[in-house]
Image (cartoon, rainbow, N blue to C red; front, side, top):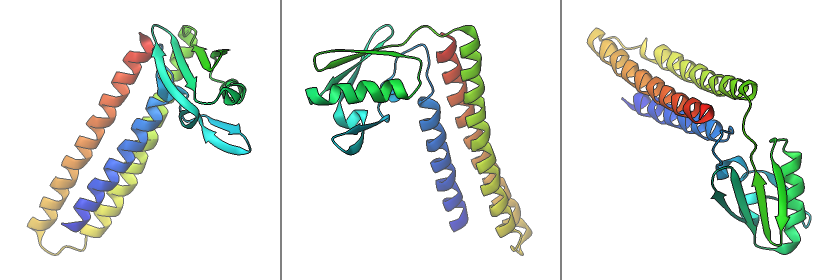
Length: 177
């Protein structure tokens, strides 16, 4: 059924969006995702940090941005500080060290709540897609075909929900570490 293929693609797009959003939420482990998409105003252009330098991890709690241009360092630091991530940024030549302080229990709970909110918003989008599909298959005359379509839809919904649950559980585990 064409509509089943399209709903499957839509579910994958929604799941990808949730994955991106959840990955950008901070954990106790440093991740380049935390800073790579921060917008930097450099030489009159707005660029992301990942366009201005390479980002690496310096365990246990630091990120390193190696700027490609020495003149961009101050702009990158200003943008990181303006992003209110609760991190410290300092420069050593072309290298910017971003220190992630340990998360407090209260902050961990706020981050877990944010992860759950993102997942619930994704589930709401999925339900809207599912409802649209259900409206479209109500027009089917054949009871067997209607039943098979509903069954396939339920399999897609279950797969989508388990994918979200997997993402949420992994992220909560990372936050609590």
